Length: 165
Image (cartoon, rainbow, N blue to C red; front, side):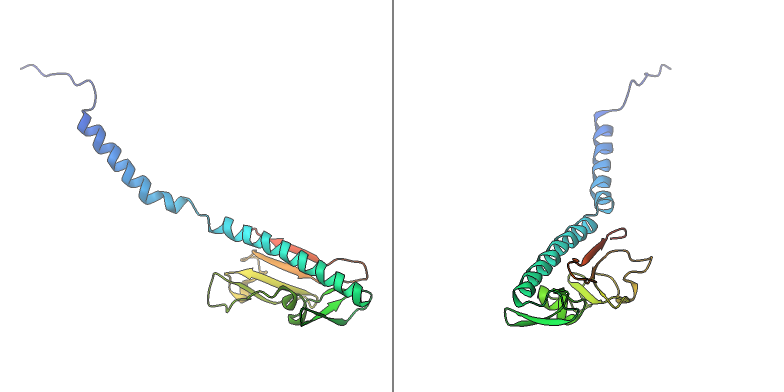
């Protein structure tokens, strides 16, 4: 009895292996590629720019109305009353929130911005798709904090935290 020596795989065996690898790649690839966090970070950077622009426009209006040196005042922009501190929007609903005119979300939909006053009295928070109780905790570090102006000729500080987005 004489056995024939095999030199490799047959064409059918190679095709079956390639098909199996293709099926695995198609089913496993979406689990490794997650663009959600990159989209949220880009959206946060965009909101940061919007907040900066709104604060600057409110400040210009405050200078025109002569209240940029006041620690508490109100101005009117496009028919909307805005609370200002040293000319910049305050960290209250009637301040930065009113000047932005964005939908702050209903907290039931992960696709909208949510906002609330920070634990710090002079700050306002925006976050995307997180529980209200988690914002700013070590578990959820994905938010924007608007810190109102603390002195004349001092811009508000805007912190963007994206470590766990």
